[in-house]
Image (cartoon, rainbow, N blue to C red; front, top):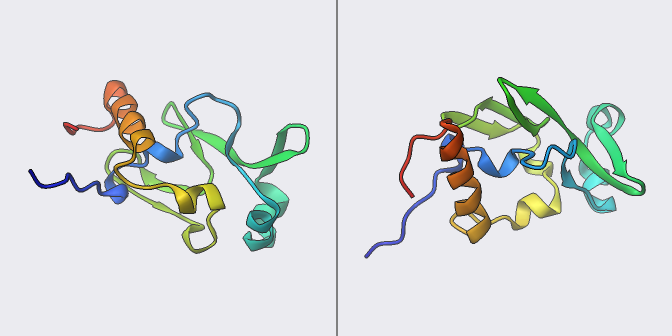
Length: 115
C-alpha cells in the first residue's frame, strides 16, 4: 500500500496553539537571531519566564501561530518559512504529531479529509 502524502499547504494543523498557551513554538537563541527585527520586536512572548516563543493569535476561533497565513484546512503558508524555528524545521509531515494534529483539526470541522 502506498504511503499517504500529506500536503502541508492545505492543512496548518501543526501551527495551531492547541493548548492556548499564547506561543507557538518555543524558540532557541538561533531561531531568534534568524527572525526579522519586526518579528523580534512585535511577536516574541515570554510566557514561561526565560523561554521565548512566537505569539499566537486568534483567527476565526482558532488560535494559531502569528506567522501562519491563509485559511486553516484550505490554503496556508508560513510567512517566515525560510527563517522558521528549529522545532518547525524538524517537524515531519506524516509523523505521529502531524496525524494527531490533523485528527484534531478534522474534529473541529476545519479540515475535511480522511487520514
